[in-house]
Image (cartoon, rainbow, N blue to C red; front, side, top):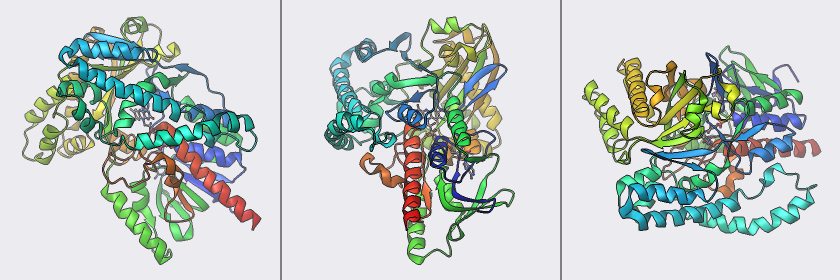
Length: 538
Ligand SMILES: Cc1cc2nc3c(=O)[nH]c(=O)nc-3n(C[C@H](O)[C@H](O)[C@H](O)COP(=O)(O)OP(=O)(O)OC[C@H]3O[C@@H](n4cnc5c(N)ncnc54)[C@H](O)[C@@H]3O)c2cc1C
């Protein structure tokens, strides 16, 4: 093979691409992983500034019966700690330590909404039911990461008894696909209460996915040294197995009929198989398919149209702070992963109709009107707060604390404001408001102890990982999804109309997240391994 020719090239060194590359290199395939940034990891990444460690993407990880089995299967050791979650509303904070914490959650909601006790109990009944489904769904190590030919104990004692329960559970899950906002309307009258339960989820999140969060809170863990330790471990595995990784290389063209890729420096790479583990809109835009067989070309065009007319899901705004205050002061208040809502009023239509109005009429709207909306938005929102030092004290300078405050944010708003030329001003206004809301409520010590402050917007996410609309978990939840969204047919999610090209990661399957990105990365690698074995036999 010539220098730039590979059995498989993987584009995108996020967690999905790294998984594909690790499995293929372990099989002895000549592979190349191409990543546009200096570091791999994509949305599973960390960085250090002024001695403070921050996680730029996902704040902690959920095993989901996938991450630990994958690590074990690849022979990777990763030191991890539990990443417990706290929930807070106004001045009340509860720690989620076990399934029994559901009772504390019930009391918390009843304290603020005493007139809705019956409805709260109805919601909790559904959450409990879903938790039982989750126990089944994530109850065993995912069979994809087990050696089913050799591990007979697993097959007979775990997999076979689990399968009928799994099939039954999948049926139940598929019936709970309605957007959680709509579902809650059928059992909860008070819109503020509905908001308290659901406003930190993406718009139109399927009910099952949203209400499974209580199980997920109990599943969170954190790699010692930061979340970046996970991609780092995979990267080391790839190199140890002889795989190649090329960073700071952006693919700008895919010539599908010639199995050729071109990067920003016009360097070309030849592949037998391509796994596209990055943004799918980008792939369909840059793929040259003119000389493919007409049947394949037509199918490709159909899918391309569908992909391009859909949009990425919600994005996020993150404020990173270095604080001259010891971890202990924060530990007394809540755990290092904390969902906090400063007021029980709820966002209502603030981030829906009111935001839609601003966006639709943006040219006519005065700056003051946007800032007034921003006042309300920041006051009524729910915040995800992460303090890495509370999970691993080595991650902060002695006596100080690094803290990340984030919330779901609309890409289009930032985009329009940037075009209007006042993005920096808007970011500063937003940071000030978030700080004032949080220091007036849960962390008063933020008032005068901040020694470092900066933020990432949806536009930063788009620029950094090339994610359409700054999305952090692939496609927005819409009626017609351009990719597979049923777990029982997840293995098909990695196929594209072009036989030599596969797809993986957050854009290949919905709903997405780290575990599904890993799962699709493995599925794509398995397809290639199977195909190559078949070819070798013939
Ligand atoms: C703040 C935040 C919180 C989150 N919370 C959770 C959570 O609690 N649970 C959960 O499961 N998930 C969470 N996620 C989502 C999760 O991190 C992502 O869905 C997942 O990491 C996606 O992995 P991926 O490999 O599919 O894609 P990405 O991480 O986007 O990786 C794609 C890679 O491809 C590279 N690339 C793009 N274009 C090109 C090109 N043309 N050439 C070469 N390289 C290219 C990018 O630089 C990137 O490294 C969160 C994300 C964020 C940002």
